[in-house]
Length: 396
Image 1 (cartoon, rainbow, N blue to C red):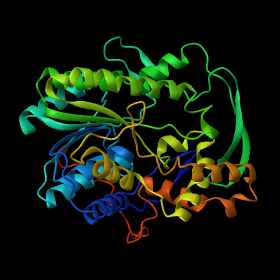
Image 2: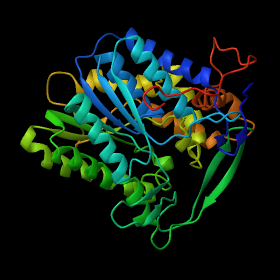
Image 3: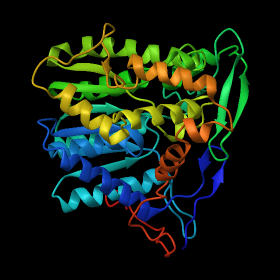
């Protein structure tokens, strides 16, 4: 079938299998170009199909020749209906790993559930014995709690007062003002239940109980802080409370792993175009301004560049891992440079529908957004029919 991007709000309802495969190949080539990393050898990535999780799986496999197991919840294709981009990404990484003689298997299902945890543990027992790195990169809006049976839904809301600021429709380039009402009732608790650290802790405890964590194991979860501009709706809002919980959980996990000399970290990453960030008002405008500045400064990074630097310059340097005063790894350091943030703040004041084409990088934002779904890659003939019925080898 011929597959074209179809937009509905901040999501694309189609994905291109060949384009997704090209995206994975491009990321693999980048990792190979940067040289070998003396890193992990047996890796579990929870949330492995897109964004930072996908980049972590690629970096582990093609930077350190690691065996990888990826857990994700993606829609398979049906005749005449493409699967989700994460499905095609995962098929591509398994195919490329096979060509390179690397172990790569996948599990598709709800990572919050006890069933998927058990399935994953059983696979590790059977095939790998133990893992020496666990990446936790889930980005789900809902969680069915495996113990209580309660369905929790996260919300993106400020705490205390209504938040009003600029935003942009990245499809049209129209800059408007948006107001977001403050959270109410159980909004904070529900958001923490979905996006906090409880499930990460459950995963590590389940792995530890079955002796599936190698001595010296590392586990890393991903977080974001961001600038003063967005803190009312992000870091000081409901999501920020969840991130606080996630970061506190790292210390609890590290305490639990002391007996096997293991460590848990939260890596604070850069603002990037993801399906999740595109849904957050204000963030697309901030990212378009940030991209303009960071590209001009020669310090722009995407997911794969961020994670390669995390592994090469932070996690696997043969000495204690550098962290900030709260024990977090910071690979948002270039984004948060004073000079960069001062320039963003100045441009923010100038940002209108008329000025944004000059002062921002909305084309770069749109390009990255299309890339998420396998569109817009050089070397892909988008006019040709694509076979939507791509299987993930270890799942087929």
